[in-house]
Structures are given as C-alpha cells and as structure tokens.
Length: 431
Image (cartoon, rainbow, N blue to C red; front, side, top):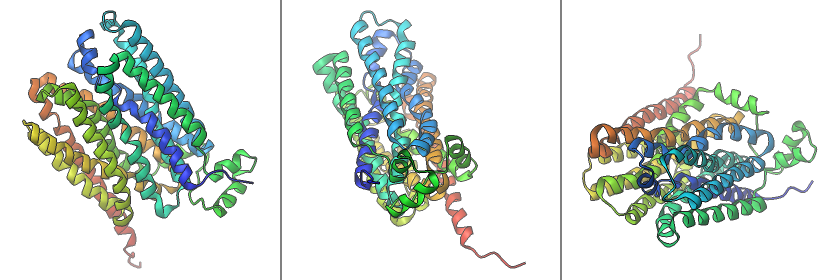
C-alpha cells in the first residue's frame, strides 16, 4: 500500500491545525475591557471571561487525545476546529447584532458559552502533539515537538498583537469576523495537509493492528498506540509519572495560557498602558515563550527532559518573584521576559518526557498532561482577579505569588522524576 505523507508533512499539518485553533487563548484578553464597560462586569467576572476558552480547550484534550490512539489525529482535529468555527460564528453574530447598546449583563452567560465553544480549538494541542509524536522518530521527538509547540504557540501572541489594530480599524464585530475568516482558512488548510501516521493509514485500509504495526515499523514509525480510548487513558493514568508531568505542565503551560489572557488587563489596569501598548507587551511575552519553546525542545534532546525542566522552572521562579515585587513598568517588562524564557523551555521539556515516560500510551498521557495541565489557563485568571478584589490595585502584583508556589512545587516534581531514573541505574545489592 502507498502511504501518504512524510514525517515533515505530518509535523506541518499538525502544527497548522494547532496554530489556528490555539489562537482562541487570546479571544477575550484584549477585548475584555470593552465588554466590561458595556456589560458592567466585576473583576471576577472579567477573570472568568478571559479564562473561559481554556475550560473546554483544556478538558476536551483528554478524550480527544486518547481518541488519536484509535483513529489518528485527522478526524479529532477537524471536529475540534469545526466546533471552534461554530463558536466564533455565534460570537461574531452576537457582537454584530447587540454590541454595544443592547449587550446587557443578562447576555453574559451567552458570551461565556460562545467563548467556551470557540475554545474547543485550544484542545487541538494534545491531538496534534500525539499526531506529530507518531510521525517522529524517538531520537528527534524533542526537536519535532519543540517546533510543533513553539510555532503553534505563536498564535495567541500574534492575534493579541493584531486584534487591537483590527479593533481600531474594523470595530469589535469586524475584528471577530476577520478572526472567523482566518479560522476557516486554517481549517481548510489542515484538511488538505493533515495526515495520519502510517500505522493509522494502514488500519484505515483494512489491516488489523497486529499486521499494521510491523508494516508501519518498516516504514520508519517507532511509536504505536496502546489500544482503544479507555485502554489508553487507563493505562497512562496508572503511571505515576503521568501525574507528575501533568502538575508541571499545569504550572508552565497552564500558567502560560493564564498569563496570555491576564496580561492585557494587568498592563492596562495596573500600569496604565494603552490598549495597543498592552497588546504589544502581551504579544511580546506570548511570542517569546513560543519561540523559546522551539529551542527548548532541542535543549531537552541534549540535556535530557528532567534537567531542562529544572533549569527552566528555576528561571520561571525568578521571574515570578520579580513580578510579585514589581511596581514599575521596567521591572515588570524584565520579569515578563524572564517568565517567558522559563515557561517556554519548561513546556518543551515536559513533552520531551511524555513519550519517554509513558511510551505505551502516548495519546492517553498527552491527554491527561495536556488537558489537566492546560486547565491552569482557566483556573489561574480568576485566582489572580480575586487578589485584585481583596487588595485593590496592589493585588495585580501580589497575585503572582501563585506562580511562585507553582514553580516551587514543579521543581520538586522534576527532581523526583530525575531521581527515579538515577535509582534505576544503581545496581541492587544481592540477597
């Protein structure tokens, strides 16, 4: 049978699908102030608004990533992108019809619902990363997944950068219409470029799993699924390292999502930046984190995932300390850059470790790690907004103590992961 695609094309297709779906992280960060003004939202309501796309975008990663182990990534990716298109279409029509005069506080639940539906695109991460993992040789997993995560993660930064400009030129409804058109174009692009790894193509053409494995191995595929969705999820859930990686990813990637959603509000409300300046500063953080992730994957291939994670989390910890203490524009900018460096490399290190630590169920493990880890993008912004409610404007800074705690816990877990391999290498005494 003629297998379509190459590892390079497989990586490209998965990255394109992730890139266009992942932009939903920035859905409300830049526009929250406009919606707050016309709807009379409280700080906590704003916190939930900017976080809501990450709710579906994180939790749906779990079943959809495991589904990859059964059918490959193409079908799950297209379904998630389709749901995101429906959400963006509904949001665009709602804003066009009711904003600003008729967009009342009673419509807040509808905006949340449409934001949650649009956020389905964020869940493409774990689908694409499993798809790319099955295409990539083990020795190049770190580099391939670093490219995948780094390029895909650029989307929120780019959209955060251009959205204020689109708002100025076309208004809120026009800006979301442009977003919707780009989402549709990206989905069409994935339809024509996204391909499943050889094993799944062989199975789709009538081979049994027992026949498809050796045939795909001859074609260069090195990683194979555990079985059905339930098997993949349950098998990976039994491995304690899955949960250690999930906790680390909650801090690094969930923290990244939360920062990207929260920083526009932080820069505008705490340090008085304009909407355009806040967008540029947030985009700087998001894009730098994403670009560094590409390099972080290569670094993890050389140093090992555990060592790279510990180094990166130490940098993240230092950046969080700076943000907590900062009351000035310059120090906050420096802290934002330090956080971007640490979190970007940590994100790459975690997914270098997933195929290594849980090779028997990469899809299931990717679902748990990517899904529950990304849940930080939903859980952290309301926590940060609560500090503002408790302490007033000073809470914008002290709220970053949450990142200090997350970095410290994650450092401990990365150390335990490294020690587990060190102990495995020590010969046991004879009895």
